Length: 281
Image (cartoon, rainbow, N blue to C red; front, side, top):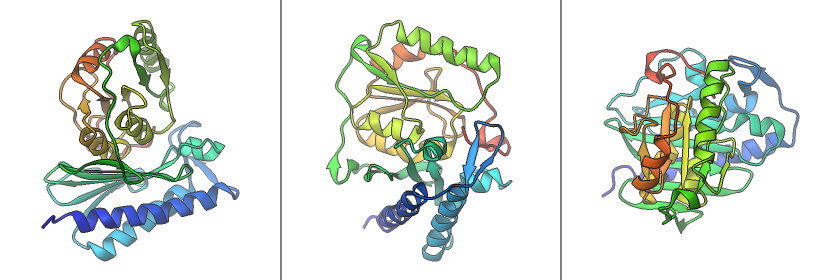
């Protein structure tokens, strides 16, 4: 018997409830607060959704641990242990949400012994439920997902984001990487404004690779399972193994394209999630 199926079923159910809250909030005035900068936003909806998820899960699984974006922003430690842990981004794509841009997701990842077991990413405004379960495959609204079979970087689509760090040196590195990748050349570069949905697009075969530095564990935990269970790979931006706490990720359909892309990335290392309080990108 699968010991975590009940937890995954609960994650899907609570993600749908959270998605309803997000959709309702889009129709109303939103109180927006600044986090670390004028481009680092948080709304009351972020906080309400995270509280909803944590309360619901705690009632059903009282011994489980949490890493939540808003909880960490409020000062709680971001420490991943061997205990069953829910890693929650209540509104991935808050800036999209504030502007009514349609890529907004509730992201719920689940780890045991520090290993990703399942992920649920609900694209609220599209009503798309992405799920991935270790060893069981990935799905969108019940239909199986499979990464692209493309192995030629020049025939590929690449996704990335700018993040919220406006330090000129960091911005220069971001643009340098984009210029190098664009000139390989590739078919094009895109960004949904949500790390979780960019990764789900890799899983669905819409883009071949997504990379970013400056994301957080709650941005990528759930979608990481969805990518790998759809046949994709997770890497560090330097080509090494993926580290959930490093704030660096490459999600790609195959090793060949991953190797080509990481050679073009100008690497830098933000403070790790497990080394101090962080805010969203």
